[in-house]
Length: 300
Image (cartoon, rainbow, N blue to C red):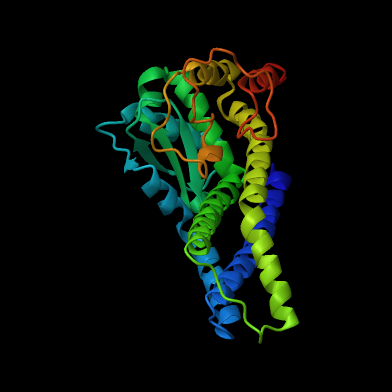
């Protein structure tokens, strides 16, 4: 478990560094297209560093605001609060995560935050209404496992960056549509190379970022499932919860493509499609529920 947490911290640092470089090049390209001259590289560096800092410290708040979550209370969510208190004994976490609730009929949940000391677990009202005690315990233990394994920083930062890059790409595509930029004779060869790289990253980074996001999510769900069983000693609770979540027909209204990987199951549903995917593919945000359940049944 320690090796997994250490690896996740290292991967988080690598990914943040990659995104700083990508955003710097994209911003530099945009600034040059806007003919800002020598200020372009300065603006690009400042913009990328500020966005990285903001994503690290405020990614959880951005995600919670996006899904319109409210703090959980003992008066309204006593069962949820009691389950978290009970799991804290076996979790090994030094600080209890903050609890939030989203008003939505789809049963789902996610964890976010930059580290276990600043962690959040968020569940939907559908989860509280449709799951029994042991099923809800399994889901909360799964989210606590993401916190314990340091998955939360990586998933939150990647989600914010993906949304950020998509937004920049959209803004610049509109700029090109409404007139683009004029060629400048005084552009140096170095500037031309940087602008070319910026353009390439502008076009391809949303695709690469999404693929990275999906691959990381799939890999970590299996680990979180197995760690959850270590906390609850009750695989049947999580197995039953996953079956209920997978069969629920509702779509989570506040979810989006940038945050979908954070949830315990894919928040998007195709109503009317009764054929279940037997395995995940390149574009899957999660492993298939069948694969996850089989893995849980094989835990000894």
